[in-house]
Image 1 (tube, rainbow, N blue to C red):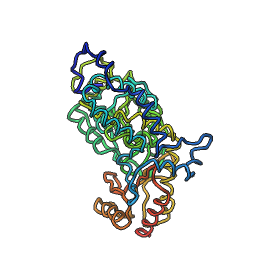
Image 2: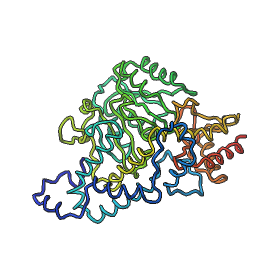
Image 3: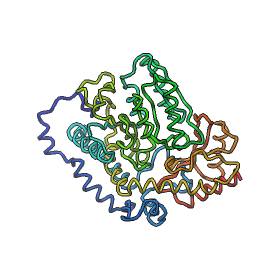
Length: 444
């Protein structure tokens, strides 16, 4: 871990004496004290009952009411814009605020003497949850930073090569892929993903693009599109590309914590993501994964010195938000206490709750397929025939002003703009029924 507060300092001979006199607790001890208190305090996350299939538990409103009670949210507005970032649960928020106070009090004494050890501990904890080695995981401020470092640092491209992206990829990542024209002298090729989508026609879309453009050496593949909520069959696409000698950088921004997966499940050597959307960490905690033997294929950031196979040289964030990083382990605890499979099943259940109540409306177009393998919490829609940004921004505004429902307009898909709705674990079924009723009034 590099940061401007400690990267240039030489070992201090007084370190042992200072640590002995310090009032600080190492991260593991702090988590045992604060974490156990948080889980026992009001707003604690209940452990998921054992022996119940996720799809069955997803319908247990008693259990999910207890989970929802762990989030302090404004119920005056129906919050269906949870794809932006995720609210912290109360146990995580308490830990975060305590760590803000500690860091503010202990200042450089903590940052220089204790934080490096705490960082190694929390990175190890995150790596275990993600199913990778600590030396394959770097922590960043967000997924955009992570993916820009992977895309910009990928050094196996040569003049005459090409890179491939799709219309449903994130805007900043598309821009980074296009920038490779300037940085690496390659061609940047975009494709439009099929709509309506199936697992097979999505795989075929990438396969056909590689057949048309055999010079492609790098692809950007997004697990769950922020535009429509479409979940791609990433593992199959990555495997198909690998057979053709094409590397993939995977954008798992909306997938980590929303889907039941570990990073090796994706089959990719390079993955960018964050922890503040669906894991529930504070804002400003992201990360990227590089399979250990592929680390040399990503350049050190701006000439960072260090071992060629060290992932730490691939990012230099500067002085970090110590408290946000230190609140990552309790967020991971909450994630595991509920269970990734249970979270995915509940989020899909909540999505289905409103979609199935409006799917019969001829005037409403649902953009996400009904195949559960191809969606999670997020689904976008539009009024049929209305695909401009202005029309969909007006629709989102009407939902907010007339019905008190917060959604968001998304643009960039080849088929046009849309409105995205994203429930969270704290969303109540009656709020989704209210949303469905609003759509029936508008589109019925």
